[in-house]
Image (tube, chains in turn blue, cyan):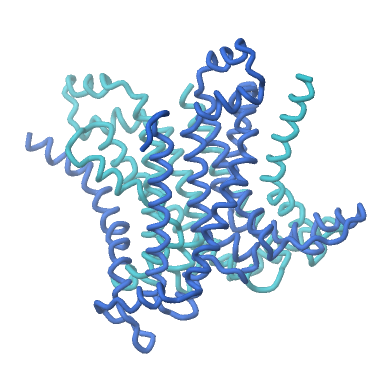
Length: 282
Length: 259
């Protein structure tokens, strides 16, 4: 028994201790930091609500918060809608070989060079980039995309589409085919089958995909700053500015808390919705 | 009609894939373009930008640091991820799920929040602005990925395997090395590759916590915030190639070992 305990401890203690010290403690310390004060650009341990008051009383904070929320919501809707036909095809129609290749092509971008891909989009959608050159060639004038809302959305879409497609696809592929066959036999049309059978059955994947898109967009810094131009700041841009220019870490920590709370709310709402049984009211 | 719908579906799917891969293709294409500004028309093939990259000591230094951090992170994260996965596989005890949640939670926190939290924390313990700080921050982010990959493999391991080893007089620890590790070897290699790629590519936390010595992605970020230079295309292509090799080898190993 004693030896088992020693063995048990050797296995379990290192990973738990590591994550507690280097992940949990910093997160808790982030909360503590919101109560510290800054004097002459130096951090001072303190217990003051000034940071919370200053941030929550600032009108610009709500503007930025609302913008971030709306951007993330727009990105969620756009990616979910664009991803759905692709997931549908991969889940129901594609052959096994096509599927494997597609999954491979979707997993790779998730791990590769987010920053570099953003730069590449900057070049593509700039005023004399590929897209505008082609638009010019067919007689349509330049369309400003870089440093606009469109640019931000293009950034979000490229980064989240692969993940959202994978999550939706996993749910759709797991649907009982007999269900779809039954709908067909009952003369349910193609579109109606999708909305009456596929969408409800794949609810978990669709919701989790949407939640991921929202969370990633809500916390992203790169798309709004490098493709959106940074002139309409989001919460992440606000955090960076507060840290890098103002050196006000406590205030940045307050903004970070607002971010965490929002995302926990979204995750909670999404999970409640995804796993709610049909007919239940709450 | 059936046919038409099918054609429509397939073209839409292809369109979406083109959209996802357009920036990557364009990046690689322009890295070989002789023109200083990455715009059409194409002005001729050139390796000039690659030469410029290899001649820039700040990029080479950043590259070396990135590799050093990525490799140490991957070894640490895979080791700790393996222990966490084995813990979850082997035992049931009260509070296990809460502890497991702490281990796997980091990727759900936005990188910007994690970066800020790490900066606050590392400053207090005197590790801010040091490569060690980047190493620690990346390790907590990578452990959950290693854990997930190895846990998946452990789920395929028949429990009788370990029991047989114990019955034959093999100790607990020895069983780990003689039975569990060999069974998990493909997943362990895949985890090493994936975590290397993750750390090699991560720039948000690294940007927050790094000082004078920066990693390659952070160097790229500062280049991006400066003037346009076609050499970014060349660095980007190199970075992409490295990540792609790491990830595709990992995927190939996972798929191959499941057969």
